[in-house]
Length: 516
Ligand code: KIV
Ligand code: ZN
Image (tube, rainbow, N blue to C red; front, side, top):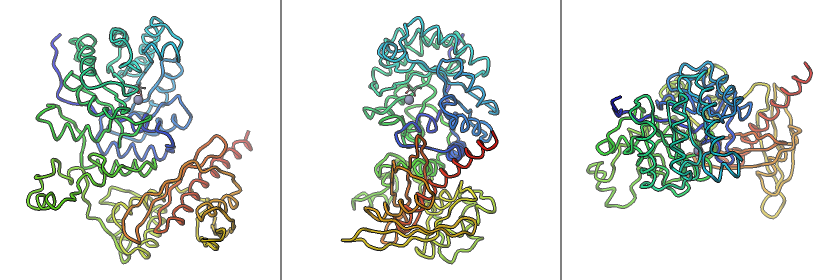
């Protein structure tokens, strides 16, 4: 069979699976669907929507994405267990194009310490699981986990077994971020020639972690060895130090097409928005100097650089910020009305149903009255604060403080539910803490604050801030977001959103029990 190497590089995004494994991230199925729609607008080729067998929440997210998101192939991860593969297939049923991604560890340390399986048992599990997955999908990916610490001969043997059983993509994970570009290329070359051989139906892929800061470099180096799929996550999210950053791969390959000689189908204008959405919903801030999407990525500080860029942008910029969707001119003010707000949402490709539109518009007016102007990023934050707000929940209407400085702060909080006004006050060791305590009294819920982040959306004395919280109640976690010009109010809004989710979860359980 003739070997033709395609020029197309497949972008496989795992923000919703490996990215979500980053500590402290707890995306709801609604958040995941919103990110998946945005990834489809970015035109990635494959979305790994989750690990269907890992939890009911993951199953629901994969199933909803399979049903609602069109364009990319939708994938679910699965261990080699038959039940995992059946769950993945079930969740993916509605997808127009689906992929089951089967993995098993192959390194000696993982086999002996975690799996307690011999090489022969691992090989047999590969054959059985890939064969089973092929009964449900034509598109099956296989990954030998911890490949870069596995003896290369066993990597090759495992992958050959997978191909013989019907795998169409062979993905080589650098699970612990151990590889360096030259040895990774050597391994990938062997996989390319000894596993793919002349079989044009098999795609060779990489999945690199960033423990040594080499994930992107290793992934790119694999292109020269024949890899035609790269797995990554937006903003480089993922286990520990994260994964290859999807946006860095897209822009490296586009900017240095002369060197890499491969094409990607991504719509780069969606990169900036995708990055901001993922940051907002995960609560993970973006490092200021992060390549491509950091706020300084196109900022020039020194006079010489500024002078050069003013004369000719390309003196110090190798990418056009507008090609990444960086520059935005949307700004609304306190005099902007419904039509202007609707127009701005339209330009941002945001569709809100009637009630959500009214809520978002009211909140916009409230903030614009205090702040004057609201930028595109502020509008997006307002919309995502309001998105997913469930009716019949509590709405924060007021918060007042006494004490402070030398005295213990006391927060008096007022919320409304369906016209009823409820109030509580509580002291705390700070204003945020007092507000949280008062809200817990109103909801009648005891929660632990697991994570609390404040991100500035704009600068200046009247800056808007977004607050993201994760609270824990028993073994469950709930996230909430709040936006305000006042950090304490933003925090109280974020707590209210998280407590509302918890309260809705509880009443659902209670009514399930009533009907049992
Ligand atoms: O890092 C890894 O090995 C993985 C596999 C499941 C592909 O995430
Ligand atoms: Zn991984």
